[in-house]
Image (cartoon, rainbow, N blue to C red):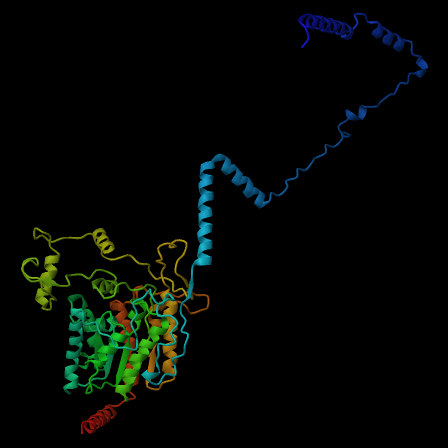
Length: 530
């Protein structure tokens, strides 16, 4: 560092230098330069000056005014991508929080979609891998080539039984009662007191068509019993005599067990056996299409072997779009068929409001039914209860689960166990319609190769549309529910078609031929006993 006196001297020098600089940069006070410029302009020679005359008169004449030039504005087209980008930027600038939420949501949807495509297995629906149309005996049916037992493509998601083995449901008291009721219906025909033309064997639809439910006849089903008598009871105006041997909830192995244990006795020889089974195999126990076909054919072969002169009609599986829940049928299954809670009580209990007796029984006496109806229409004070239309609609809404009306029958042959909306629940609905089509097609081909087995396709009775290739088929909800259960109108349409089919077939089998067949069976039995 410099000493203090040296720094003081340097400051004085800098101040002096700045003062001199300001003096040099200041303009002069005299106007000598301006005076010299003016004097030079006045002393210029006149010969060097040129005057130019410009004619501007044409600018004042109207006719010769120059036309104004019109410029067209050019609107360049905006790219849609650029417009979307600008809109997104404006939205992000205006609502940044909302934009962040949308981006996060879109990212999650994309991730779930990628997981669904890459990790979610796909199962083919409506495919029967092996051909069973050439089966001539029950010994030719085997389960060794089955790829999967369940309709979802695995072996664990269903409760499917072995279709080749007869299985009973004797652990249920109602089922034992219904089986006993069926055998009691056969007694007049076995003893020879009545003749029989047709035996209808199957599951819940067969039991309901006779007005029965698990061996009993509740009041709301009496209309079905009357309808069945008009079609299949000669004493009540029918064209033929038939008996309905069905139990609600039965699968093909259950039907097979019943035929082997009392519902197909040796002395019971109807001309035609009408088989209605397979619906519960597919929709309740959720067996695969191939397992369902094997179960139906096992029942057919049992009848062909024990009744070699009988004719068999295979009824097609009814159209449906939803599965049937539960292992055993309940009253809700009957309500699903009638599309509403049946009017009146299904049963009453003995004693005072069921306190002094716990045994429930169905009302059969018309007077008792009328009394129960009167009690239902009265309130607690004994006055008649009037329900408005809104109350009836509300009661109907709360009585049953609302289902889609006339649903589309989608012919989609691929099924994913999960989708982005049921990724972690695994409750994706199984498309039942493709499976129904595949089973019916296999049964029809089987019937075409067997002279004694005939196929009855009931699909057209309950399906609307499909007349052209571009027209979508829909389920006729007026006649049948989404789970394949018919109401009163549906039963009438079905039984009318059945009657026409049976009348045509019975015309080929006179009663004389039936007597010869019965006598031959009796002679064969006598020879076996000897």
